[in-house]
Amino acid sequence: MATITLDTVRKVYAGDVEAVKGVSINIADGEFIVLVGPSGCGKSTLLRMIAGLEDITTGEIKIADRLVNNVDPADRDIAMVFQNYALYPHMSVYNNLAYGLKNRGMKKAEIDRRVKEAARILEIGEYLDRKPRALSGGQRQRVAMGRAIVREPAAFLFDEPLSNLDAKLRVQMRVEIKRLQRSLGTTSVYVTHDQLEAMTLADRLVVLNKGQIEQIGSPIEVYDNPASTFVASFIGSPAMNLLEVKAGEAGLGLAKGTGLSAPNPHGKPAYKLGIRPEHLHVVDGQTVPDGHLSITATVNVLEPVGAESFVYASFADGGPEIVIRVSSHARHQPGSTLQLTADPANLHYFDPENGQRLTG
Amino acid sequence: MNRLKLSDHLILILGVLFMVSPVVLAFITSTHDALTIFRSGLQFTPGDQMVENYRKVMFEAGGFTKQVDGWVMLQNSLILGLGFAIGKIVISMLAAYAIVYFRFPLGSLCFWIIFSTLLLPLEVRILPSYEIVQSLGMVNTYSGLIVPLIASATATFFFRQFYMSVPDELLEAARIDGAGPWKFFIDILVPLSKTMIAAIFIIMFVFGWNQYLWPTLITTDESFFTLVRGIRQILQVWVGSQIPDYQEAMALAIIAMLPPVIVVVIFQSWFIKGLVESDK
Ligand SMILES: Nc1ncnc2c1ncn2[C@@H]1O[C@H](COP(=O)(O)OP(=O)(O)O)[C@@H](O)[C@H]1O
Ligand SMILES: [Mg+2]
Image (cartoon, rainbow over all chains, first blue to last red; front, side, top):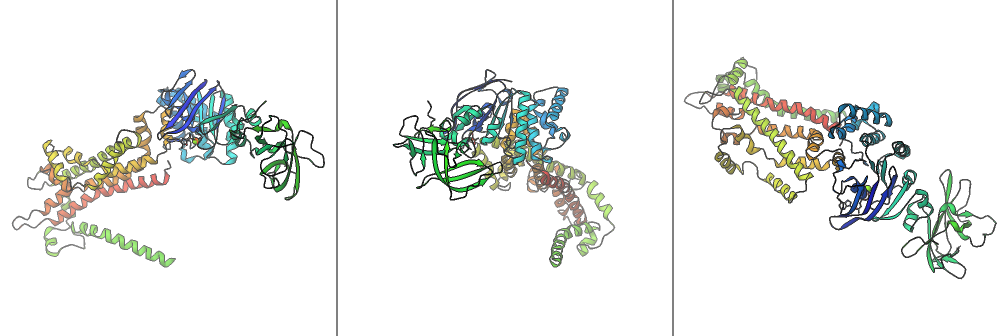
C-alpha cells in the first residue's frame, strides 16, 4: 500500500511524438484512480511509465515516497494486469501465479500459501493445474488478477483489463475488481477508454485528452461539473448536448437555427451551452418559468432502450440536433413538436474558443 | 464425390509408390550377394544374404585402412547430425533473440547481413572455410566438421519471425515478475519455441546427416568417415577384377536412411501436436 506521485511527467517517443505532456497527479494510499480518455490520448503510456516499462522523458514518479524513475519494474513493488492478460502460455495456472514469487527467491511454502490464497479469493482453485489455453476469457482474466494479487504489491496497475471480455462478463468482472480492491485496500491505477467503466470504478477520475489532464475529480464531480467541453462530451452517455449560442436582445439564442432561449449569466457574447439529456424536461401545456431554458424542437426519432427512452429532436431553420431522456412510457411521434425546459442550475456554460468551463 | 475420392487415393498411392519403391528395391537388393547383383542388376525378390550383409557392413572394418566399420560411421554421422542441428538451433536462437529483443547499434543491419548469407551456400564459401579450418588445425576433428557449418541464416530468420510474433506484453509481464533477459529467454522464449525447435531440428538434422562435400574435404582420417561417405567408399573399390559390393552399399544406404526417418517420425508428432495445441 502506498501513495503514488506524478510530477510533471512527460513522455516523448522517438520521432517527436509527445504522448504525455506534463501530467501531475497525487494518488492517495488505497485510492482507486481511473485514467480515462479516448484511444491514443496517452493513458497506457502514462501507466507504463508508472510500471517502469517505459522511460520517463522528464518529470518524477514516486511510489511510496521513493523516486522510481530509474528503478526496474520488478523492484517498483507494483503488479500489472494487461488487456490480453499476458499469461505465460506454457505454464500452468499455478506456475503463472508463482513465477514472479519464485524469481524473488521466496520460500516454496510461502509461495504455495499465497497462490492458494489468491486462488481461493478469485475462485480459480480448480484450474490451478490447467494451461491458460484451457481457460475461458473470464477465467484467464481472473488468473491475470491472481498473478497481481500474489505479489501483495504496493499498487495495482490495470491497462484496459476488461476490454477483451463480452459485455455481460465485463460488468461482472468490473464489480469484482472493485470489491477486490476495496477488500485489499491496495492503491490502484486503472486505464480504460470506457467512460461507464471509469465512472463505476473510480474513487477519482483523471480525464486525459491528447496527453494532458482535462480534469481530475470524483465521478460525480466530473459528471456534474465538467471542466471543459471535451470532458462534457466524453463523460456521460448519451453525451451532453453542446450547442453554440450567442447573445441576442432577450438572453441567448442559437448561433445557427431557431427555437432556443437561455439566460446569459456571464454577460458574454457567445458560449458553448451544455445540457445533459436527462435535464431536459418536456412541458405539456404549461408555460416555461421566467429565466429558465426554453427549447422548441421537432422530434426525429424515439429510441427506447428499456428503462428509459431517448428522443432525438432538431431545431428549426437548420439548427443542431439534441437528445432528450424521457420515460419509457413517453410516445413522442416523429414530426411532432416538443416544448422543453431545463433548470438554469443544470446549464453548463463553456468558453466557445478554448472550451473551458465558465464559473461564477 | 466418390469418384473424386477414388482419384485422390489413386494419386496418393502413386505418390507413395514413387517415393517408396526405390527404397524397397534397395532393401531387397541388399539381401543378395554381390555376384547376383552384378550379373542381373536390381533384385525384385528377397535373397538369403540379409543377415550376413548387414552384419558385414556394420561390424566388419572396411576401407583402405581397414579401421572403420559401419557402426563407427553411424556414430560419426550421428555426431555430425546432432552437433549440426543442436549447434544451429542454439546459435540461431541466441542470434534471433539478440536481434529482436535488444536494441543495439546497427542491429537490423546485422540481421540483413546474416540474412544475405542465405545467398552464399556452403559450396560458394567452401574454399575460404576450408582454409580457415585448416589453419586452425581443426582438420580431422569433430569440431572442424561441425562448427564451421553451424551459423544458419535460415534458422535465425525463422526464430526471428517467431519471436516477433510473441506479444510484447509477455516480455513486460516477465519483467514485472523479475525475470531478467536471460531468465526470460530460458523460462519463457525457449519453452514457447518448442515447436519451432522441433521443426528446425528435423530439417537441420537431416541436412547435417546428408552432408557430403564438407566432411569429404575436412576429414581424411577414415575414423571420421560418416555413413554417407562410407557408401561411396564401398563403391570405389574397382581394383583389379574385384566386383563392387553393391549389396553392401545398398545395406549401408538403408542403414543411413534409418536415423533421419526415426527423427522425422518422432519429432513430427511433437511438431503437429504443437501446431494444434499452441496459442501464444
Ligand atoms: N512505442 C511508441 N513509439 C511511438 N509512439 C508511440 C509508442 N507508443 C505509443 N505511441 C503514441 O503515443 C500516443 C499515446 O499512446 P497510448 O499511450 O498507447 O494511448 P492510449 O493507451 O491512451 O490509447 C499515441 O499517439 C501513440 O501513437
Ligand atoms: Mg492503451
